[in-house]
Length: 254
Image 1 (cartoon, rainbow, N blue to C red):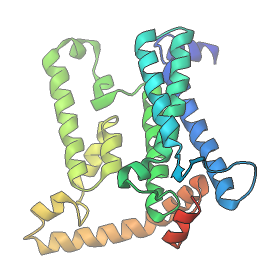
Image 2: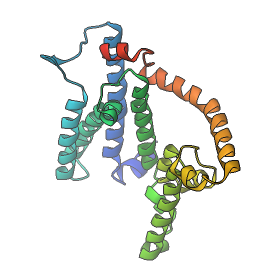
Image 3: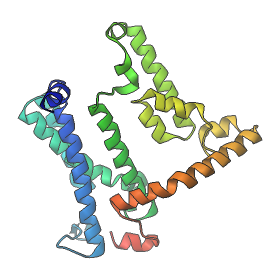
Image 4: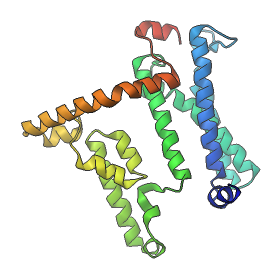
């Protein structure tokens, strides 16, 4: 274990990334626990308000992210300063991403159906950063050997090709697959060759005069959502708390 730690974390300089990811995940989980206690009216925690202004935790999150980011740039990649900056950045990012849905909608949708997007983005972010820790690199560059890495044309063509495949997957309405595909190209290729989602830009452009393709895409999307959306939402509710059915009530309890 000690050899693995030294070889895969310390020597490549990945300790700050590991610390940032750990701080990010722990901050998100602790924040969700506190907000769920506030929602239930339990414990000593209360919403922070200044007069009629509700101070969301995205505000200190932005400040900590900025401080941690600049300190990380100024402090280099190694040493105590870099590690401390990584932790500060991870805490700030956890607070910010916990309210991603608020930033996206510019509205307090924390306990509404739209608020699920925050949990989804946090899980996706943690998974992608975890892949970086495991040694993956963007656009499949880590799959190239030393000779290929020395050839600039090979590197650029690999990056461009894998980016294009991920872009096609995104155009087909498969955002999660496209994001993971930026790190693991085969995932993006899998999404790019399959049928597009019915409401995706790809389907609107290329299936417009192909009724059989549209029908097949709708049927596949129906079966996919029936199989995966329910379990996915249950997992999101277990992690972040179930949204209120009444959206007005959800806004009052936040």
